[in-house]
Image: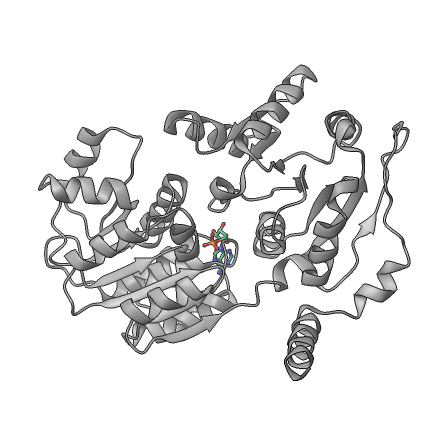
Length: 407
Ligand code: AMP
């Protein structure tokens, strides 16, 4: 129960208005530690309720003096907009005000917003430094810093900017870092930025394996477009579909194929302008677009409820990306389906994914579809692979390294 976490009455009212009944595991773990004033490292991906986990206690710790007192730094504009929306909802019954600044949108408007009361600011690194450099922003009163999706910020090369931002902040502050993965680089950032942090974690594999129905469709690469269009035509229950493509170019191409097939869809990736991205996302949310085609980087922060299906048009490069992708469906406990197109060249990629999620994925065919040459994975692999949890695989790797060293 949220009441047991130590949150104030105005924040509990906000939580109630948002329709949250019970804290998610990351909220139950992080909120009490943050309310104690501890630095916190949260290992959690989008879809776990991580945003409210850091926003609620942050709002509670803010006093009523003027100026920006909490700063949330995010890698993408979409995530900045989303986090600010959650913050605004959470703060509805408090006197705190929130704002977001990010690139690709009008500078003047954002500057004007900052001239009014802002207690919590959400920002992407570039625009934040730009505004600070021009003297349009004062960070000297920041008491709480949140680095959201730290791994993604590092992947996108934002660390030098983030470091400059940190150097502008008062030394005495509470720092929070959230990341879906804990790479060596992320650990290094934690060491240099946080002080004696409490680690909270929700199992990254819990969401997909338990709640998402995972299926593979073996298909020759040349027939992927045809299969996709045919599948969307035949199966009307694919009503809100997020498709992942390996590159921006492929995302655009898939979108064209869909349009040619009279299937309303839009693409979202980093080459599209901010208004185009917002239009695509809004259209997908309100149902105008049945399909959204995305690349991994941009899709990471997308928070759209009720995504019925995730389709991996291309097998992702890393098994971790597979988990992130399929985590977009089955949000907050609802069911969902992840479909992966499996072409002959994806044999190794599929093996890695199955080892990572600890199970063999079910194979299906689209009824009535005329398949050309393709490889259908050996059904026997199910029995072999099911016993291999990611932890078992890790242990085997360690054991074999040990053996090699001994030789
Ligand atoms: P996040 O991981 O912060 O992106 O949140 C994922 C989704 O879960 C969002 O749509 C939230 O509105 C929703 N959510 C967050 N916390 C809760 C909760 N305690 N109960 C129900 N839904 C929640």
